Image 1 (cartoon, helix red, strand yellow):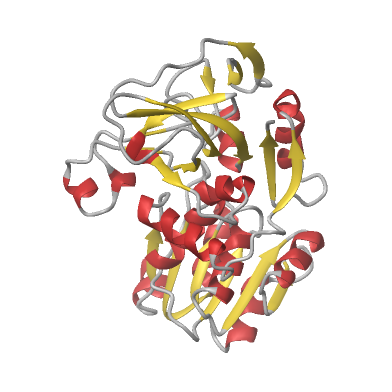
Image 2 (cartoon, rainbow, N blue to C red):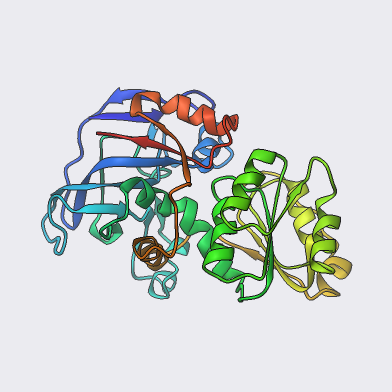
Length: 343
């Protein structure tokens, strides 16, 4: 089969021929139909977040059709449309038993530690395979695997309540779905999108942002404080830069919650007394999501409560994988999600 693999940090992916995997006991072989390109894939390419091996097939937002099932697999038949939950876990530790498999002591990630979905086929444990409900396009099911489930988990971690105000720093593939989910699913009273690019802010308004702030033109902290009367109840940091993380802390109001999901290398400086203690501020880390959250989001799309029809702005073939990566890296055409589609 063909696969797009990272061979060397900082270099383009290579399209290579490798053996098609054979599913073992409890495993499923998926014929990949759609794979979202996540900004995490860019981080892996440049070593910002290290991969588990080289070469490796990237791609962790995956959907397709069941091609073959291994011994011991029940409830999944050949031809079934499925999405892949990329968290590999032991199922037995305290974190797995509490539905937090993303914290598993022995956990690994498809597309980071083991070969992922930028390939014609993908092998995964049956537990990681979710049936896609009728009416959900496979390319939308694919991006639910991270672009939608990661901000959904983050807003749950932030304990966002109906009527509260939310500010989202960075409205790329993750942040724009945080905006949409906060507005359409969580019932936020005021949703503020912050970015440097007017095209991204326009897209944020289309999916539910009540206010937008162009941080290249105004101080976003002051703008958020003015819009909320002192600071937002919840601030989502989806950029991963020191500056935006520190601005997020400053943008939260008294009793507010700042949830960090952006990946970056920089250390962040805060003043514990004035910025955290006096405000009773909570700074929350949010890592990935769980299987149940993916199932919930698939149902929300199937029932029409969540509309992802505008989320996929660019489509490329497997042969064009490096062009797809470049679109995301250079923000060509204001990408929300670039999806690799296969026949």
